[in-house]
Image 1 (cartoon, rainbow, N blue to C red):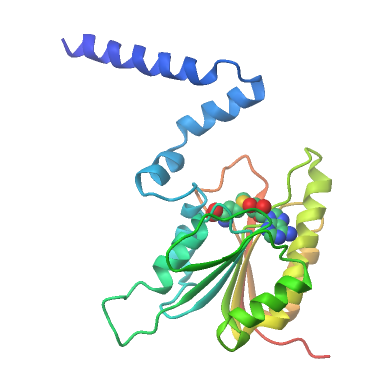
Image 2: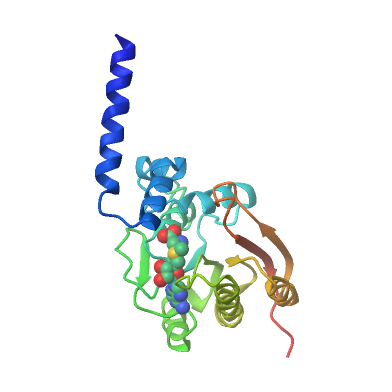
Length: 239
Ligand SMILES: C[S@@+](CC[C@H](N)C(=O)[O-])C[C@H]1O[C@@H](n2cnc3c(N)ncnc32)[C@H](O)[C@@H]1O
């Protein structure tokens, strides 16, 4: 009997998969199959996160305690908003204790970011643009943040070296942003794609942060060049 029900369930899920794959290009089919098998995609649906990337930040924050109650956090490349969801939870995690200050999360993206309780979003804004920096300075308490997060990524062209260079340039621009808005001793977490210029980014970060480490969370796909730099204890550059 159980064998029959197992066979029926298998047949049902195979039929659903065939329906979803119908009319898709081979590349889209590969992507869809991978999404359907991915435990983090399933977990993000169960836990109501906007995408699987939430688990990368959760993993990093569980280990390094980056997001403290009361902190102000700027989330660069925030759409669709999963990292902001995690940040809102963590900086306000003791809402039951009126003594603890509430935190603030500001997300920025070139795209539209659907609204989220507890977060302020700057949609259709470029993180590298000084006009966005000016908007941030107005929004942040005393114009300062404790943490800058960046999961920004350019649209991948398929040319690995070119995409790598583009993302490194975007990460380097975060150092200008840090100079304007990051508190002394503040932290920066930024995604990059590994490649020949990664050491240059690491060196530049090391010139203004006392500690810089490379991270590859378990939830980051093994076959991806994605890595994160966690830079802590910001000190203003000497000019
Ligand atoms: C991988 S997604 C971020 C996912 C997000 N961390 C989350 O958890 O929902 C990368 C985002 O970076 C954004 N992006 C790329 N370049 C940007 C820029 N110059 N300024 C702002 N956002 C940018 C893209 O529009 C895209 O939404």
